[in-house]
Image (tube, rainbow, N blue to C red):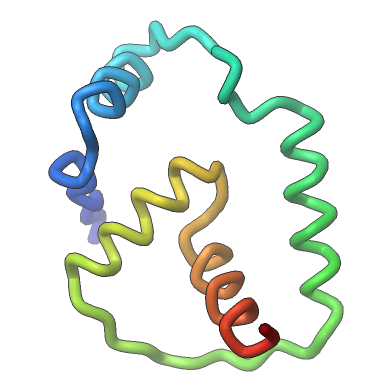
Length: 94
């Protein structure tokens, strides 16, 4: 099953233009792009959190919340599961 998230309804006009440009494959990288330096920072942060043992869980979310999480993860340049893990980790450690 290949359900694509319907995130466009959560995007403003500028974000929709960027998404359409990416889909057309004519997006030009700007100042907010995922640079090699930013990617390295994100990878280091991810590795710092994966040294602990992981436990698989099942979680039910509202569809709209999941779509928003996927949209936010796309903006941040990371998988949505990583974003969810990060949010939960921050909530229980601060």
